[in-house]
Length: 151
Image 1 (spheres, helix red, strand yellow):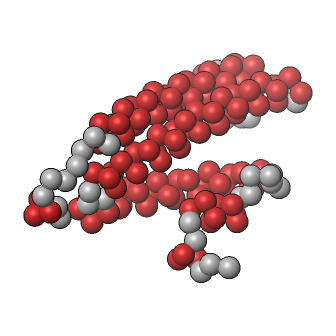
Image 2 (image 1 turned 180 degrees about the vertical axis):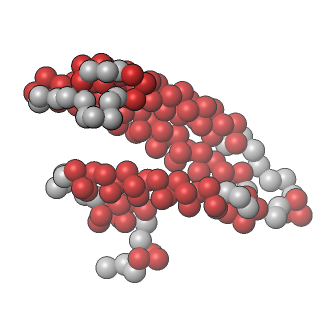
């Protein structure tokens, strides 16, 4: 078994969240929390591009991975929207005493708003993925001509 510092991202994720399950609300939410923490890491790491990503080839790798992640988030949002529709049919739902945000008022209105918002989030993720993919393509054409130009 590799030490943690030697494990690849794929191996770390597969150990914590195997694709074949088991699935549960807790594990699924924890996976989303892990994504949020990894994004937080990227925010800190990209503050100093000359250290974290000193060459265009490094940026290329990051942009490709981010584009892939955005495509996956789009699919996730679409599946969540479909899941909310199923829940609305199979469960008896009501709005709590605080009411629904943006005045949806009823459970039906809250469901409609949640589904619409999840579909909009999916579209936003797809748009973001397209922009990341384009940036990935452009950076992929860059090269360092002289080592004295490099950090």
